[in-house]
Image (cartoon, rainbow, N blue to C red; front, side):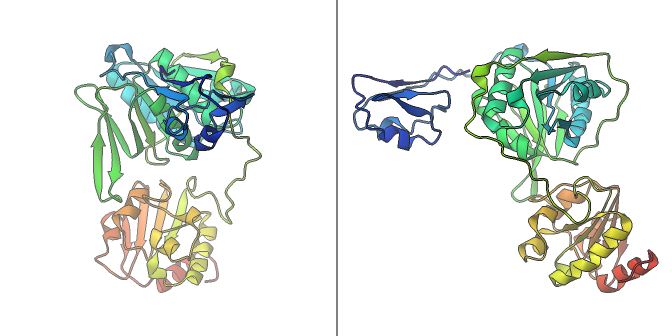
Length: 398
């Protein structure tokens, strides 16, 4: 994958092991009294200056000014899976990927890494995709950033897609930057909008400066054009019977699968209600609730509606709610059928995370609060009067 090289001169190496301590990647090990380089080397340049004997030399390949853009074709979506189940963000990426692929007149492929994923891959063919590329190996059953990054980088180098999309999830964020570095291209993280320009470039839109502006980013001279997309920002694709495409099942080169980490288990997020991102109804509270105990009122309303409880950043920063409930630019992006904002003023950072909701009900004493600008229905009233009334109307006890 790389023409870089880290060389150890056996005539100068004295086996002092100082270079082992200097390497942040564990890429140096001892073979007798000689330091040797393993596959973990990222060619960061930390070890040569640490060697007092001048035994280590880093040789970096010259980077070419650009690439032949015509060699790259097609849109790829990363088929993220956890415990053998394709995640919901993939269906959102398929919807947007189909749109981009149609504008470019190229095929749409979904890349799935895992083990025993045959059934899930067949299910993906029912969506508007042209092909599913399945890389099957027991070492890929559970996510690990190093092997995932190497396998994806290797495929990109050989197959040359022009666009590569992944979810801005813990997994997508965890390995895609490694891929971008390996294939010498750019990466735009946390996109909320994607489109194709007249020049057939991917226009990548994401919030910047704390959500105060929206930045439009292009990757004009490198390929693929890579983006991570926030969950629940784009509508999910529906099954349409498929495009008649097939599954290309591949194995993985064992040299790409080495990892310095080992999965011990998976701890799902615990919540008294339903998962916030997947909820159809969310009742959120902000600084206007005044104290943490007021969220018990929202929990009662959410339970009666079969929904989840969310929070603004202000309430999280005040210690009233855990971060896992935060909605907004620095929290979760949600797209429920109904979003009830209680005592939330509507800072732009919060609006970025919930303004795509189908219906928004805002409850705030300040009739000029920004939240009313995106609300479907607004109640300019005291949240401590309005919410208990709603609970009573639904047959509950405030």
